[in-house]
Length: 597
Image 1 (cartoon, one colour):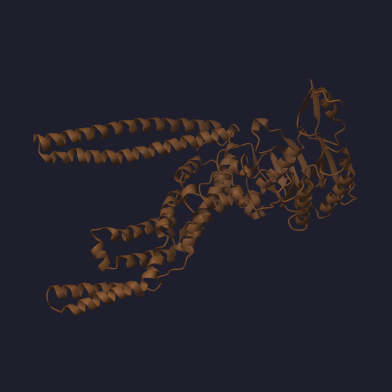
Image 2 (cartoon, rainbow, N blue to C red):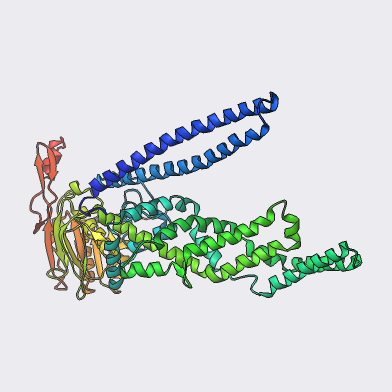
């Protein structure tokens, strides 16, 4: 087990080991390919010598035939080992790329999980290319991706956060588990429709009566007995005709229900087969955390492991499919093999079908937890948040933006809610104001999902989040940027009326209107939010807004970011300082590029 303080060296070690395994598998692949070719040529030569020239007995042809079949089986195993080593190498290459900040455009983006009009998903880059979801997700099932997305989109209750933190901490060092899940589930995202599979399992049985197979067996027995008696000339032909007619009539009576019972079973068995390796791996992983143990219990039904139940379904389906064999088909027709198979499969669905959705949910949640554990492992300096009760608060030391590479991330201490209910952040464009808003919001999302945060320490209360950072105009909807912004701010203010308290993040508030209206409107907005015990940040480069009058409804502190003009270039240190920004280099910068100001 790797030390959590050395993710890079462990990833490099494992990648190199998988590369060596891949090189070995590639060599064996070439070796077996040559042996297959030699065996095929030798077999043809032996066939010519024995059949055309009669040098050898034709019995010797079995030797190259058996040898070729053995080589084919060996070749399949070599190709599987080759594929596994290749995918494991790619897995650790991707991990190293994340450590280097080269993870964008790789992996699922999760855009389809975002409900329209969400109060912070687009503002905080939770989904899409270069998003938090893309950075975090290691899930291979749709349920796993959906569970992770749900945690990011909706803050969790404190009890859930704490149990999730415990599970993430337990899974953090388990690289073997994450590698096995990644390799076992490689085909799941593309091949398995989890919603359809769950719906198949929850469908009601269509052959519920145990009398169906009994009657079918009696009808088959009657046909067989009358046929035997007729063959030995013990009875005339009409009893046989009657028995066949009754059997056929019974089958046609239940045929529609047989067809319904078998509808979708091939696809469901295939999906469950792909899922079984992942489920089996999860079943044998020891988990002592409360949530981890609960999820493993969810992979059992009536004391039977999910993987064993899936294997049982596949065995039943194989028995049913044997009735399609051309040699066995006449017997299968007489025995009503299709009906018995359908009833047997329907019994499986009656017993285990309702649990399929629970299996998918449990596997999906473990995948989501494993995703958070992987992120925690790769960033050992990140901490779990302390979830506190009482008044709304957000207090962070060395807070940074989790989407930035560690080497590029400038950290700041940020605190509001206790001493000050809100911060007004002033400074020029590109000085770091918006990045601070997103760092606060994104780390709050991580903390309230149960993940580690990009901070040395973070203490916060249960919060809901509302942001107006990235509002856009819409030509098709006939909305200006200002209209879009005030619509979003209205939604944020409406959310402040509910529990838990609101964390608001307003960037360049009301920038689309004149300074007079902006000052009046901004003061009213902030006043309304503070009256509902909301906490948050408002950024501006308009110094007039740094003196907002909230009529004693809440305390506000001013902080700022500075810029420096050096050799005609604007530079920033991205360090937050107390107070209002007192100088701007914008005019000097405009002059330096030749503008007549």
